[in-house]
Length: 248
Ligand code: DG2
Image (cartoon, rainbow, N blue to C red; front, side, top):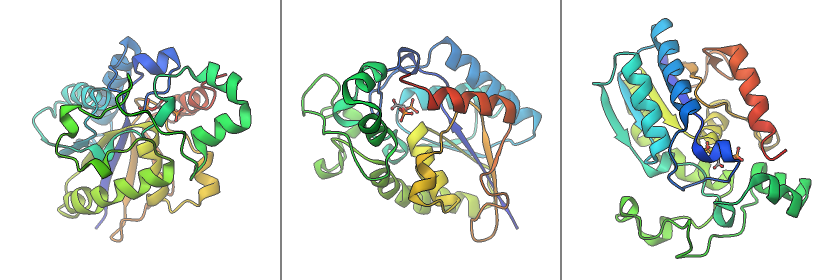
């Protein structure tokens, strides 16, 4: 028995295009992102990888990507669960800041430390400031100590894993093909777990927008093919380079 899991980073957002740190800020897809979501759905249909259940973050760029992709794959009717634990990494005080300008201000080493190190979070966001999520109704039920003010990837792994074990694994175990639509860093956290990557390796791993990454998992939920399989490997290669070079 093997299990079928598809990971999909949302399509290009307004702020990806503007080169701004996004994190928990709820920005929408841009026209390129809508197109990528369409293509994602076509790839699922072409490969006959038709999801039975969708898990998304509570951010509209992921929700919309999934809605478009599932419509194209004619699976808009499947069950859906959304959870903040799949949200993007909270980028703290960097949310809303320009990546290029931040790189110039901080220098390459500090910029990459905040962007990609495993355990160094950016400075916390000021509560009540423009891009803070305190007061957002979608987090109203969240105990205040769980609402992040900044996160490093290690924090994301820790808050995402309970959702993996409690919500996604049971769906896989029941034989469903599971689609997870989320974000660059929340998916890096999941890939780190699935592929059992060490901290040094995950630093160099980037997830492209809008290209489904398919994992066939064995009975212990380990990937049959380490790293999974991008449904459009050439496009994935180019898009990974673009993510790497953001800010430059
Ligand atoms: C990006 C990731 O998140 O940025 O928060 O700026 O996937 O929601 O667009 P996403 C952000 P990097 O960590 O790649 O800079």
